[in-house]
Length: 111
Image (cartoon, rainbow, N blue to C red; front, side, top):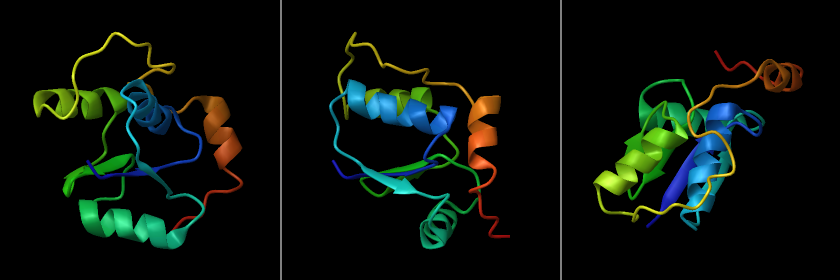
């Protein structure tokens, strides 16, 4: 399975996607959309929208998705099996005020 995850370096939603990948022991490409303009542009071009996270699994783009939704997609399509391992992070939570404050000075607006 080839997985490309377009994520923010520090964000509740992005951390939820990472947690699902760890929970299921999946290798994935963690693509930084905050510090690299080309990565962000690629995400928008592939997903057709500007919101993150976006996760591409074997060519299928899941746009503006939570870790919980990614896991449900993979389970529904028999890409992973259910397991009771702890995720280690909330799978369906936005960025905290602290995370937003931490990103604010680094965030580059592309539009």
